[in-house]
Amino acid sequence: MKRFRNLRKDQATRDQHTEVQVRASDFIYPYFVVAGQQKKQPIASLYGIHHFSIDTLLKDIAEVTALGINKILLFGVVDQTLKDEQGTSAYLSDNLVSSAVKAVKQEFPELLIFTDVCLCGYTSHGHCGLINGNEIDNDTTIPLLAQMALTHAQAGADFVAPSAMMDGQVEAIRKLLDSKGFHKTKILAYSAKYASNFYGPFRDAAQSSPSFGDRKSYQMDYRTIDQSTDEIGADLEEGADWVMVKPAHAYLDVIQRAKSTFPQTPLVAYQVSGEYMMIKAAAAAGYLDEHNAMLEILTAIKRAGADYVISYYAKTFVSKITDRVDLTQTNCSQIH
Ligand code: PBG
Image (cartoon, rainbow, N blue to C red; front, side, top):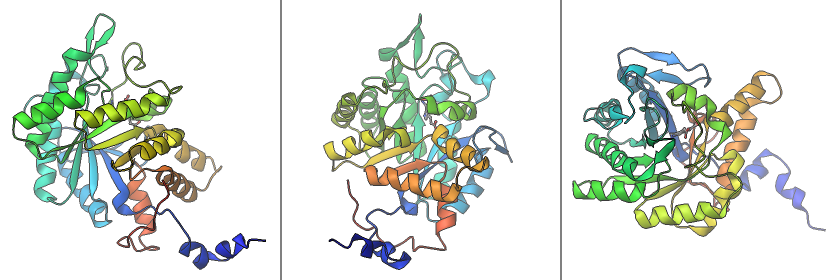
């Protein structure tokens, strides 16, 4: 008889035998930025998450960096009156996100800043690209995404993160950045992004719901998996530095497949808004212990093979674990 139970005997023994651990430096923390000043408005659909104007954003980032989080992802949320068919406010020079990037970089030069590159928060119709009839047009959209990425790079973003699921978007961005001297700006590609039912709370937060139809003609069908490695492979060829699987909780198999197919590529998984709110809602109803459920799922996302996790839980998670584990300790080996 093998004595497996010796490995689980007590807390100290269990702690010695963990294979996967979630650390502060694994997280990328998302922020929603709005225009104006002194704004910190709770987002009704996303418990614990706010719309920040740039001044209050800087204050929150000071707290988050003090906890050991060193990566953030910025989304711009613009007023309805600024939206048009072409999503112009996304890529005008001195747009909202580029102003935020400049301010954050100046105050936190060590922080890694990621910016979401997509038109859906800026178009009047809420689609991620330009409309032609009833279609979302691929080839006229990608130069606009590249222009948007360029404004973020000029402001000092470390990574631009195209999430529109337009074919060739990574190549278009890489070429424009290189031609303007921004070869050091990296690309985190939302490569395997599925058309998911779990984006609802985000679309409320970013005011980016499509006004007609859905995103199924550009985001992936959840009945597919082989296409995920094709998408990732193409993005890497086009010049992506890091790649992403999104959502995370319902796509652990896709994460595992991505890591085993591309073991050398940094892999990010996005625990999306609906996945976050599912835990929040179950906990609020008394069905689960929030902290333990959060810990289990974030660990599962890493165990599946994610190197980094975008999560609305990042701040809560890290503030809860700091008194229990040494965040500066290096990780135990991970199974992929
Ligand atoms: C933009 C974008 C979306 C999310 C991240 N970037 C929404 C969408 O594709 O509709 C969703 C993130 C979340 O649900 O937390 N395209």
